[in-house]
Image (cartoon, rainbow, N blue to C red; front, side, top):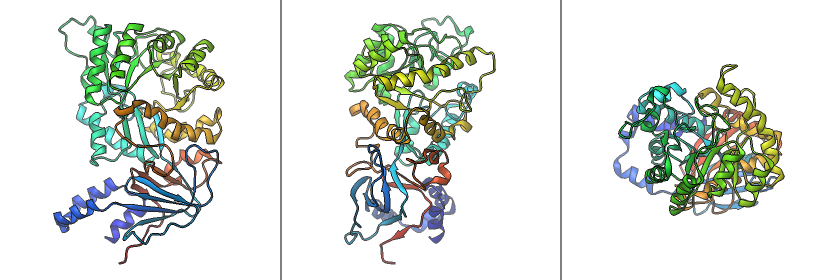
Length: 471
């Protein structure tokens, strides 16, 4: 087993090691009873000599010791924690490194991030799931232990991750984005219009990327379908989008009555509705109907920001700028023109959010480009244009966890996330350096994230591992 230990020390994930064991036949040496005994043992991990960023404080703790039992942070102490009652424990020597909560991306597309739009609309769903599964592991290895998935058929992949079949982050799934005809989620070709009452579903609807619904009754049905499938929140397209082909950015989509139908259906299940929207009219109509979260909002005005503040509406923002992280639409194209308009509004929207003390969450909304997905941490670091490094880290940990908690009992994971405190879930990162001084460390996770833990399980470990067990 010396070779397997070395694999873990050099950062090979548990999922990869499982595959190695299975392929090499090593598992055959262990009888079924031994596996049953292993499952009964609660794993214990001790982080020694770490400085803690807890997700809510402005600075780091003194040198501390953090004990994880199972998937819960059991104890945090500035004094060494005795281990006499632990026959076996994994010891992580922090050597002054920073221990912080796992990162949370509040606007992610598990099924859409690593494939082109054309592939998404034409490829077999099995292929799409396999590509998304590989990207899910890479997402976790970037330090993102949780994502709020805002459109796409991620239910099966989420289940596979939760069951340990695939490695990846926790997923809060929305399922299909609900869109009106001609809305941001309507990716049909013009030749598919009109659709008769008995016409088949479009490709986007069949794969579960979107759900076209017009009128109160259809919105109710599509909302309830996503809740039945396991949605932790519901997403509606309330206005025009950059990547969609036929809806101008300025148009408002859905009436107040249609929004209310979705809001009431979600509320009956104890959860909420978020919207894709940029413009004041679209956002104000949705807020009046009870929508709790606006994703994007780059074109808001002062009146809309005040309305959001008065209603406690969240702003889930992305650092959309005309830079290396922009989707490369052709110059002069319809999509490029919309993209430039949104990029121009980002600065003003964040300024208004700060001015009116909105609940601001952060996400990336990376689509259709696996290479740009690797810049997930870099996009987080970009937020220091408007916030201090400490406030950015709070946003991507404790604050985003507050947003996830809006799902209430529909949250797929019950427990406190986004913080390093006694009783919280053990989603932890050990950083080689201080991200409060240099948040850019998170842009290079391969080098700077020395330990990645999700739910008490170590998926990456680049520091020496010791054990108190007698050999």
